[in-house]
Structures are given as structure tokens and as C-alpha cells.
Length: 190
Image (cartoon, rainbow, N blue to C red; front, side, top):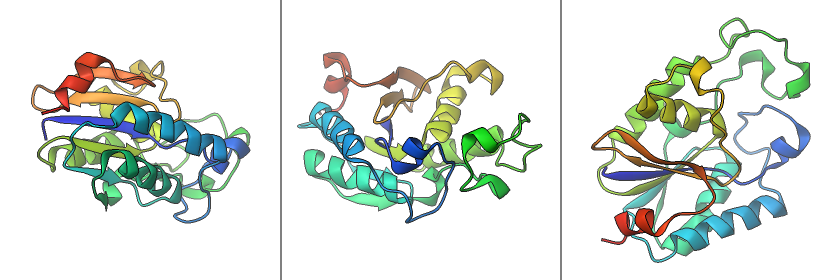
């Protein structure tokens, strides 16, 4: 892979409800979320990608399907792009979760998510879109920025935001942007 655009799914019903969920088919995109993804798709229209790689969760598959209409490429499900494993807190409201670290809560660690996301990114050659979730994307960006979990707390991965990585140079070129600059678009035009 040369360049990757890591994009978070659009707003979903989990987000509206304040729920943590890794369930595959339960929570889709809201109408607002679909519009957010269409806006991102407009940013990527006429750019060249070898494919779209997506988490197997409904909200990311819906995001990928919308994006594929704009970039005219196939969608591949890859379990390594999946949402965090929330353990016993899957399906719970965020406000119900005790103030403890991920490991104390029995959730998937920052390091585990970073490792699986980097493994995913490195296993594809060419230019790809990778559709995932806020925390796994933050973990991947932290790898390229050489940040630990606490140092990465300020990275905000908004709905349908795009982060661009030069995978050969292991360098983040854009983080959590809703717009792709002409400079970034040029990277995906060849």
C-alpha cells in the first residue's frame, strides 16, 4: 500500500444513543450519517483506489457501500478493521462504564488494536480506503505519530472524517479532516 485513507463511519444509532457496540447487524447509519458519508464521497470522487477495506459491522459496511458509489471500486470486509472489543460493556451506555482503564474493564487494549490495524494496513499494496471506527483509527494514527494511548487522547476522529497515511514512509499526512486538500487528492489521482 502506498497511501491509505482511514475513514470513520458516519453517525450511527450507537452514537445517537451513547452506546458502545461491536454487534455486527444491530446499529446502522442515521440519515445524517449517510449525508456525512456522501460529503466524504464527494471529496474522493475521481480519485483512484484499488479497493475499500471495511470492518464487518453494519455502520461501516453502509459507509463503504456509499463510498463505493463515488469511487467505483469493490468493498472487501476485513475483520482486522472491526470496532474495539468492549467485553462485558458491549451494548452498554457510555455513561454506565466505570472510570477505569481499558484493561481493568476487560476491553481490548490500545496495543492490540494498534497491532491489528497496522497489520491490516501493511497487508494491502496500492492506494486504499479503510473504513473503521474512531478508536481503532486513533490507534493506527498513534503508531505513525509514535504516541502512546495517553498521548493520543487529543486526536479527535469525527464521523466520516478522513486521515491520510503514507504507508511507505510511515507518515500521517492528514488527521481527522472532513476535507481532502488538492495536495492530498493529487496523491490518489495517478
